[in-house]
Length: 289
Image 1 (cartoon, helix red, strand yellow):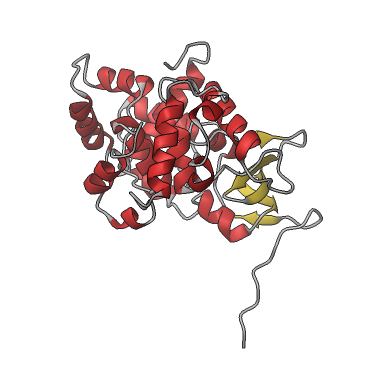
Image 2 (cartoon, helix red, strand yellow):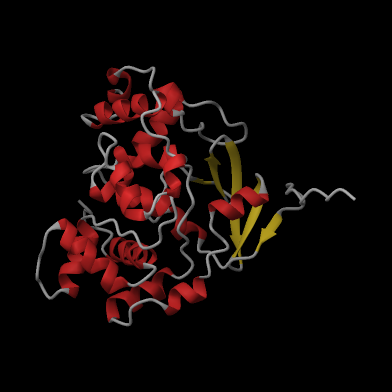
């Protein structure tokens, strides 16, 4: 007997996916930059070329449009948050972040989109990264019916642009790095899917071969596109937090990264994301860069 198709959402009968999830905090925590909040408090975005609209109800994810299985995967609803929370460090900073950010999920993002977005993130605030991402989508992405923005253009499409095209999206010097990376991928120099089987140190080294990808950006990609939950991107916010944990003792980026992985535990990526979002929301008037 053939298997029946999974239920699909409709406006009259949305699909409920069991959480828990803090949807707004997840989408505003600096992982992804294109989702839009609508007047009815639902959120609209694009995953690959799939338009989706979701909301939250009693901690669960409500799917109004889009494939439920794809959205469950994207929002990582199978991550065992209870186990992850039990592994959080017991220091006051980590526990305060856990209390204020409970329900944030580490997303599973399309790999090229994540690579491209974080190449453009260097020395930029979240609002600026969002503006660049939306402009790239508007100018060069394919329409995603039902979404307020377009799909992110593939590296094959971007490889055929000129640097000036990307500079018009506000990228500045980042335009050159993004274009070189797109052309490298289009030429088959690196296969973002094939390298997924590498162990984390080798995967990080492969990512750092991409123009514009240093240690911090590589760790963002490891965490948000390759589900390496022990990866710790160290930006200005996390650097400050680690210095407090180390009682003012500084170190090289590599030393701080090793300390972070050791100090924050096996799910250090989750811990740093909670620390990052908690710090930003607690000090909303400060610049994160």
